[in-house]
Image (cartoon, rainbow, N blue to C red; front, side):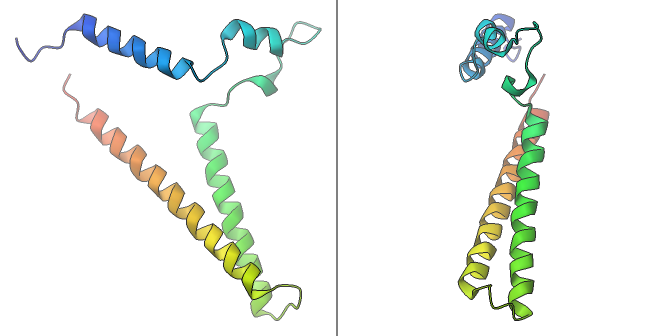
Length: 121
């Protein structure tokens, strides 16, 4: 019986986590009043993007940076006079740093998933 989770404490912790995450978002009434157009419809541009959408945008931006670095490297190797070696190296380092950052985010997500899956019920 001592390992049993007190449901009231669990609910209290869940509510406090929810309030902490909502502190970074606009209040719902304020968001609706700002986002409402003259026709009464809610404008989609003012809504907060979801987690999956943000991750997709991050992966796409890493991909764009890597493709840009590859294009600059190919242009330099082909002898394009408008491409300088410093531009190629900077683009390469940007691609490397952005990939490493994405890799670290992925590692933290996997670690958090494992922690959640290993939690006792």
